[in-house]
Image 1 (cartoon, rainbow, N blue to C red):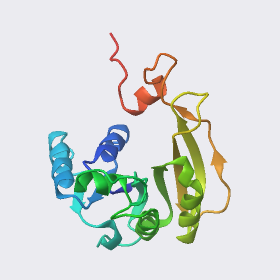
Image 2 (cartoon, rainbow, N blue to C red):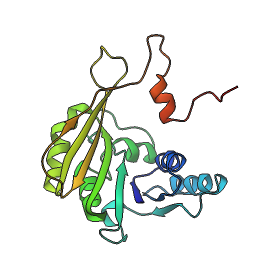
Image 3 (cartoon, rainbow, N blue to C red):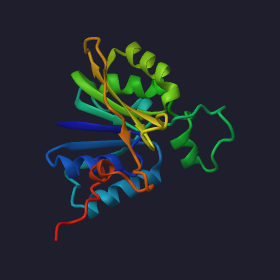
Length: 202
C-alpha cells in the first residue's frame, strides 16, 4: 500500500504506521525544512530510508502524481488564523492554524493524490465536523467511518477521527469512542496499544 502523509511534520504518523504494517511505503510532505530534516533523520535511525521518504513541498502545489496513493493521512491545523492569539514561531503557527493549509486545501490535495476507492483518514476538532463533511464531499470524498475521541467516557469528545473514501457511496458508520484516560488519569490500554507502549512480557 502506498501512503501519503500530508503536513507530516517530523513523520510520527508514518513511523507508527510502519511499525504496525511493515510493507507500507510512506511519503511525507511538509512545508517546514526543519521538520523534514528531523523526519529524514528518524527514518535513517530506524532503518526505514527505503520505506519512509520526505518531500519539502507545499501540499497545495505538490508535484506528486495524481491518483498514485491508496491511503492519505493528515493531522491538519485545527484553527483559523483569526481564532485567538496566534502561536509564537512560524513552525507552531503553520502546525496549529490554517495560515498555510486550510481544511479545504487538505481535502483537495487528498482527492487529487488518491486512486479511485482510496481512503483519506484525518483527525480534527468536533466543532469543525460540519465544515469537514462539506469540504470532503465537495472534493468527491465520501465520509464512511467516524470515531470520536474523549478524555473520559462521561466527557464530550475532544477530537474526531474520520475516514473518507474517494468515490465512495453515501453511508457513515459511527464507532464507539476512543477513550484516552482511565479513572486514575493514566492512558487507557487501547491508547497504549496504538502508541506501542505495552509492557514487554516477563
